Amino acid sequence: MFIAYDVSLELIRKLAPVIPAIARRDRDLVDQLTRAASSIALNLAESQGRAGGDRRRHIQIAAGSAFEVRGALDVAAAWGWDLDTREVQPVLNRLIGLLWGLRR
Image (cartoon, rainbow, N blue to C red; front, side):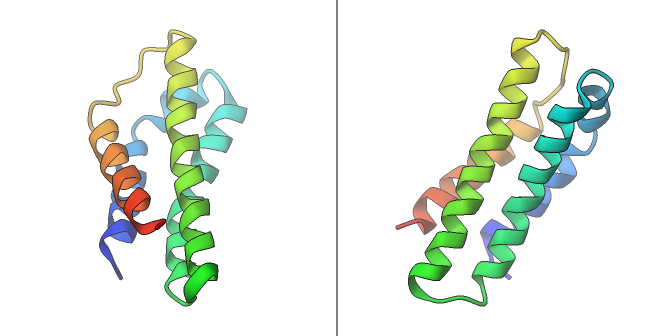
């Protein structure tokens, strides 16, 4: 497909080990986190079959979901839950950067 889509799948793979630690404390937060991460990949995949403003809309939705993933991780950290997101953060930051560029 394209780089942003590949990075979105890499993000999901990096999140996978973090999910059980969040799930032990807050099933609703982990549900929202996994739905947001899946939404990024699915919207990017769907954007490939679209053109113009419709394509851009799917990319914007993916970007919003990426920020939602960041927010969910921030909320977990604010609760003081000990999560190792060292491998997640660089991938998430890269993806947000790619999406920011694609939104234009």
